[in-house]
Image 1 (cartoon, protein in one colour):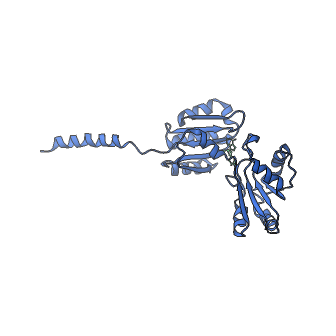
Image 2: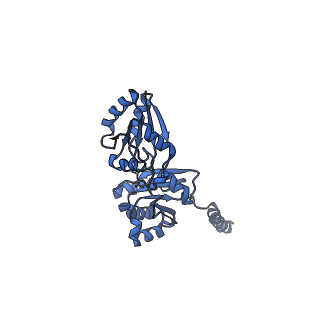
Image 3: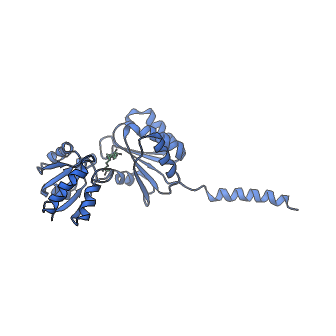
Length: 249
Ligand code: SAM
């Protein structure tokens, strides 16, 4: 019985591939790739000639049977996506689930992942965080999702498409409050890498006034919700109590 390797690839900078990933990609019988044209460029760069098969969102289920049979017949397969870690807002879940069910060994080969890369440099609390993937594309659904998250006490992390960035920031600012601190992490590991921390209001203005910020790939991070200060509550209670006390006979 073969092994299914789940191999992370770079999210921009090709030097971020690991030695182990390169060895696995070289040694397996087949690479199942989200987009074979995309992955063939990566393989060319590292002079790897392992055969490629497509395994993307649209054919994952059909392709799954074929790949599982190959694994059961003893072939080793590496699963890769276009960038970063497979299954993280990328295809692969059904294949990995089926492999686990069939007792095929699944071996993670870790590496780049945009959510972790962004969190590691954002300067927001990183002890607990909630990765929310992509926000819904339609405005109503997006606003509903944000409403349900607005009192989240962990750092929130979203992936966002560049053409929806401004709209999402506007919704975030309206629902989470314009003074909530956020971070835009753009083009990570690439030439125009930008990591900007400021209030949501400032971020909206900054992105609206600079078209460059609406290009490339980005991760949005939102600081945790904080309950209103207890002290100010106590001050107010004290004031009311004093008023009431004066009214007592
Ligand atoms: N599997 C990938 C991972 O491990 O991060 C994520 C794939 S998902 C389809 C693509 C999204 O990841 C982009 O829209 C963006 O939100 C984020 N992303 C990927 N590369 C990035 C980069 N270099 N800088 C910032 N965000 C990136």
